[in-house]
Image 1 (tube, rainbow, N blue to C red):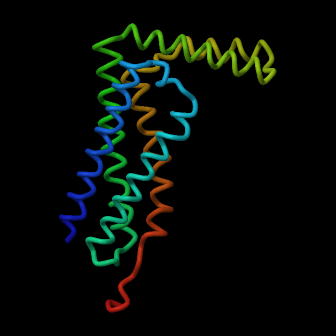
Image 2 (tube, rainbow, N blue to C red):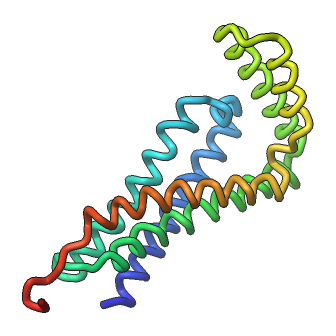
Image 3 (cartoon, rainbow, N blue to C red):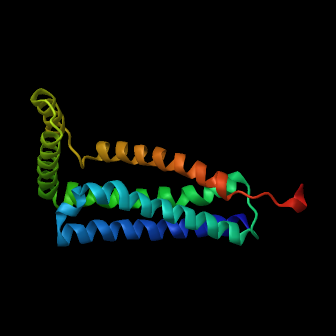
Length: 177
């Protein structure tokens, strides 16, 4: 049973990775500005990632006869999330560092402009805006190191969510007690 749990989780991870890659590629082709859209990046993508993790965990529970321990529930959640984010990050690094680095610069400028407009709207003091913009200009958003740091931060965030999901999804088999 344990092998089918992991293989199912791996499959969901590949599906998630493909979905995230399709989003990135379609955004790149149709309107690259989607890649710096606040609502897409803050709400929709994390919800999609968490949903796939939950679906994977629910499928694992079903495969295990409706009962699973915390470790099984967490593993079923974490594997697809980690695989999906890793696939997406790899494609992003390749796309914006090797295939089209000019688009990376455009996205950086667009992000700076959107951040500046938001800060002005919020009444941020000019000195604070200047510091934030200088920091953004110095950062290479799509550099491998930056993307790996972002990958690690994402995994930490989704791990916390996964721990909560595992707490909810675990169910002890009363016949084994």
